[in-house]
Amino acid sequence: MPSKRAYVSPLREQAAAQTQARILQQATALFADRGYGRVTVTDIASAAGVASKTVFASIGSKSDILNRIVDQGVVASGYEQAMQDLFALRTPEEVLEALARGTRRGNEGQFTVHEAIRKALPVHENGEALWERATAAYRDALHAAARHLHTLTPPPTCSVEETADLLWFWFGPTGWRTLVVENGWSWDRAEGFLHRTAVATLC
Image (cartoon, rainbow, N blue to C red; front, side, top):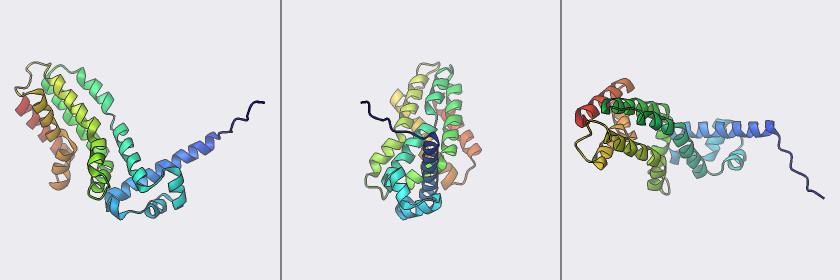
């Protein structure tokens, strides 16, 4: 006799997904504002309007929540499509303009996520691995951009590795944060400066 298949309610699944999204959104905001070490699961539950046991059942521990934030941030950056568009560009100036515009969009749009992760690093049980997970795809994308630049005319005078290092220095999350957060620049001003600096150095 065939076993009965468990009934799955689409409405229940939708409600569960919305609850998870709300928990992650509130956790991200709290981590970015107060710092990971100063936020409890109870704080997250209260902000999301659910019970603490719902947070644990829906996502897990505070560490699990942070891991989900990192994973969502990588996906939400949209770097894969941006890189496909970049590879179609045929001049170094166009590539550097696209990098300035694209990384600005990613850092500005994901600012709260980046702050949540950054503030977790000093107190996380493995902050180095966390930062590696959060930035690995970003670094790989800029390295791919460096390789692409070296197929164009004129190519940068430095090596591919050095070009990749410079792109990370200018367009990585630390460069944007230094100008916008620590020095109070507007995103527009930072984008223009980083673009001009990259063109002047590499072109």
